Amino acid sequence: MKVLKFGGTSLGSPDRLKSIVDIVLQEERVLVVLSAVSGTTNSLVEIATALHNDDKDRAIDSIKKLHNHYVKYVENLYETKAKKEEAHKLIDSHMEFIMSFTKDLFTSHEEKAILAQGELMSTALFQFYLEERGQNSELISALDFMRIDKDLEPDLFYIQHNLERELTPLKEKQVIITQGYICRNAFGEIDNLKRGGSDYTATLVGAAIEADVIEIWTDIDGMHNNDPRVVDKTYSIERLSYNEAAELAYFGAKILHPASVYPAQQKKIPIKLKNTLDPQKEGTTIDGDNREFKFTAVAAKDDITVINIKSGRMLLAYGFLRKVFEIFERYQTPIDVITTSEVAVSVTIDDRTHINEIYEELRLLGEVRIEKELSIVCVVGNFPRNERGDGQVLLEAMKNIPIRMMSYGGSEHNITFIIESKYKTEALKDLNKGLFDL
Ligand code: ASP
Ligand code: MG
Image 1 (tube, helix red, strand yellow):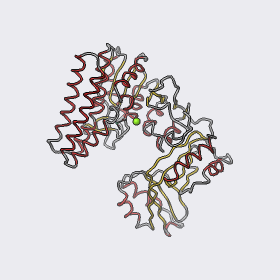
Image 2: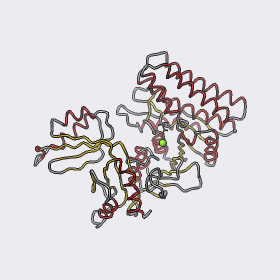
Image 3: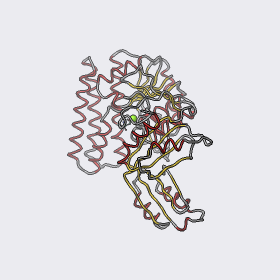
């Protein structure tokens, strides 16, 4: 069985939805994971924020706008009066549900229930459409098998067990549809896998059923060697290892949720990145170990903060780094890149939620400097330990860019630079020329 995941833009209009149905129906038996229709989750976040701020008028206004959007969508999607009515009823009931929160107390529990409505609507509309076309399909609710534990990590055992129960009676169905992103938490409440989490649903589900392949369908023909939004000439990479894909996704390639690589890697299931606008294109296949390329790809991530801690006490001292790291651990703030000298250490973070508390505690260890508006530029490829000259090629390409930090040697497949964000475009262009001759 294959797992096919489609993102919000692939459902962005009734015509787009119809074209992905054509892709789905080419498969013998398939589990389809869907995001919300594009823009919907953002609207739901807006509504929830307004309710948090007790701005009911604004929330009601946004709900009405969202409702109108779906009314038009339904009118253009279905042929028959009966299906249109059924779909309007469904949308009405979701909108009433969202509206009900304008009357009650609003907490983060209600917020998660609101955020779940996008995927619940998109999958139901999709199933109605297949029904109208007389297809052999069934909708199953992710809330019946997707679950995160008390550390907010997916509970694989639970997912596998419960998904199997859901799928067993559906052996004769060609298409099975479910929601990406949404799940239940350790208390059985509605929760989610965080923004962009539908990819993660797809690979978790793929791993649970040991799918033949997990296809992530978006609007671009796979992962590119450089950021196509910034650099003119880029190309789609045919094959990537799991590790390369995870690094690129984490360090800025927006096409794939970074956590989603791991479940597929554990079960050795290939992930394919495909383009709904050009389904014939091969796209990118992610599987196996590292490839032969010297330089595979470059990705960049903005809004990075560097924290530099300088201390006389670090000199010849042990335990200093532990104290530093413990502070980040206490505030559940992941560190991405680290560089050290004998008297100072620089670390990068991208979650600034607890920066003030972290700053106050670090100050007790030494002199602390915080720099914002930085970018990570990550170069993925093969840099074996005994090879000469890789660093030189990279530094030559980066020679016009002031480098704030550089990390080399953590793995043989990644070299990372931290630069001021204002130099990012230039850096990506220079690397495109220097590494890929483009
Ligand atoms: N609809 C959710 C979001 O917009 C999940 C996803 O699309 O992956 O973040
Ligand atoms: Mg996405």
